[in-house]
Image (cartoon, rainbow, N blue to C red; front, side, top):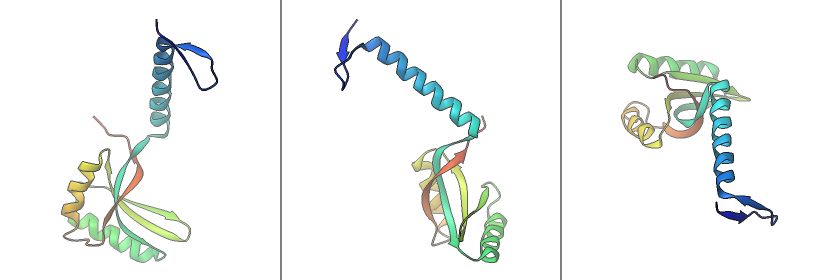
Length: 118
């Protein structure tokens, strides 16, 4: 058993540290499952105060792209249209490349995304 000290000079075993890490990972998983989201990426298509414009952008996107979900959110005083539920940046960048042909001002943002369904 290896023994180490923490910042306060207290002794603890490496095996105890490993078990604490496992507990924290389990808590993180439980929290994500409870709130049904995980940290990830989305592509932002619109940001502005006009609700009608936001709805128009959402409808236009949904007409051209059936496989991605468009999310409308409101953060006073602006509306946002964000699409996708990407768990990796690389996956989001691939979709952004395709979306740029229609929505040239689209960009990638970090967001809480829906849990993937397997």
